[in-house]
Image 1 (tube, helix red, strand yellow):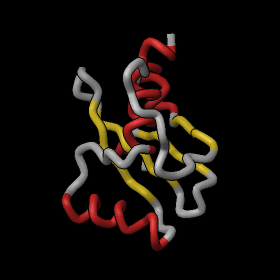
Image 2: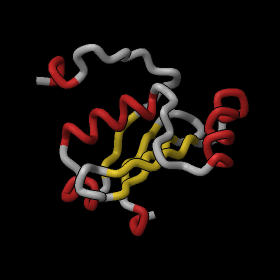
Image 3: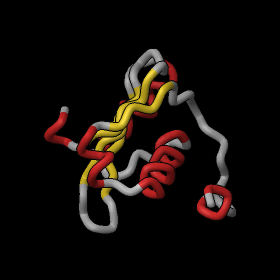
Image 4: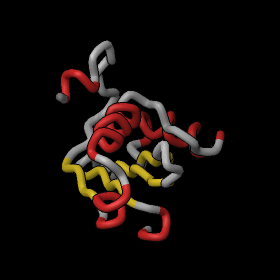
Length: 99
């Protein structure tokens, strides 16, 4: 099934995600397919719905070793965040109110 989801996708990550940690809200509100697709987008440098300022900060984070922050929405309109820590050991997926 995973191969079908990513068929035709470029799966080369620009940075390490480390251990993936899902919040309770994401586990309950965001489907597994959306989780996988979003992690792929995040790792490839598609920051989703962030501001221009946050997008620039993410682009610079490759050189400054800062955290990387992305915002996505499911088809149902559930907004969730993906944050990769500066040390690249952890990537957290959470709903905004869980921050």
